[in-house]
Length: 236
Image 1 (cartoon, rainbow, N blue to C red):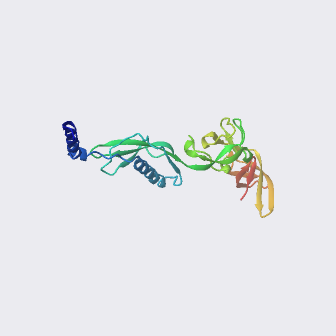
Image 2: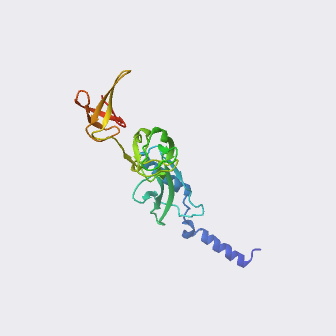
Image 3: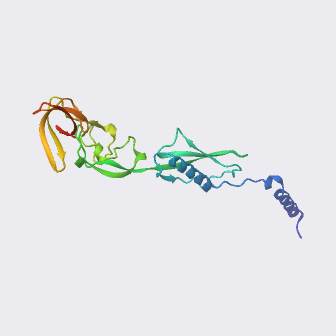
């Protein structure tokens, strides 16, 4: 026989189960769905950026987090001034009857070939191909725009000393004048396997790759050439 007290407890339990309040208990929002939305949002931003092949790493949300199931489509957004490489926070908000906003940590990596030094080099050193090597690196970790081709550093002068393995940036380099006005230079021209050399006088200061006017010491004619190295002018 069921006691009177137990009957009352069962009655109240049944009333609670079928009451509107019980029936409207909120579902718990899937954290995986939030993370997936953040991933897809960043992927869209990447595809419209200069780094369409960048890698995306999502830091999982705390599994203890309990959010009400969103009744409306969740809205992703960037926290900050705009998309960038490196770690950033992507917000996901729900504007349903129980609104909430949560932030997902996202790391965006773009691997690129960059130029690094083979050994420590002093300030004012004139760089050569033997001083550097190429390596692949996540450029999102770099503060300065890196040099990405060895040809861009040849003949450049270091503004300050650098350590072995340092990533070279354009801000660390300055163009070294390889030719000075009034200086005697060697003019050379190539035609197939034949190379002709002659002496000349530089009529201006110039850096590597720069066009310069020179006077042929023999004919006294003024011609134009390109600085190919210290005191060397290539005539084309």
